[in-house]
Length: 130
Image 1 (cartoon, rainbow, N blue to C red):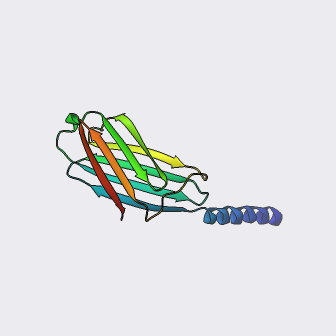
Image 2 (tube, one colour):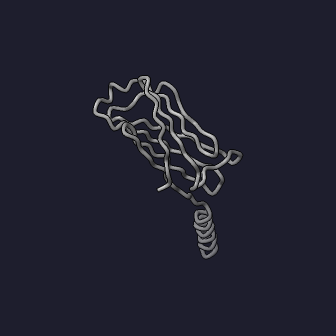
Image 3 (tube, rainbow, N blue to C red):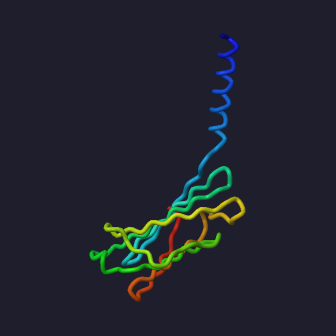
């Protein structure tokens, strides 16, 4: 009985110790123009992977008038974007991107610039770290 308890406690200790080693570091860039508000949330994992969660919000009243959207997010680590996106009913567009350990990473002092095109209009939003 004591032996089983020792093994169980040992496994529990290893589980707790391994959970402490893995961590996530998060920071967010935000910015806005007259028509748009944008944010880029970056989650850097201790295993060198990185998640990038982008959100674009239309600040106008008529979401349906926006039509198709093209957007580009540019950082020191490269960029991502999309063509032909439409806004949700509440005027939001969300996009996620992932970087593996071989990709360049976004840093807290990175320059982040978002270009949005819709209905023949173009706006550039400079995002800064909160």
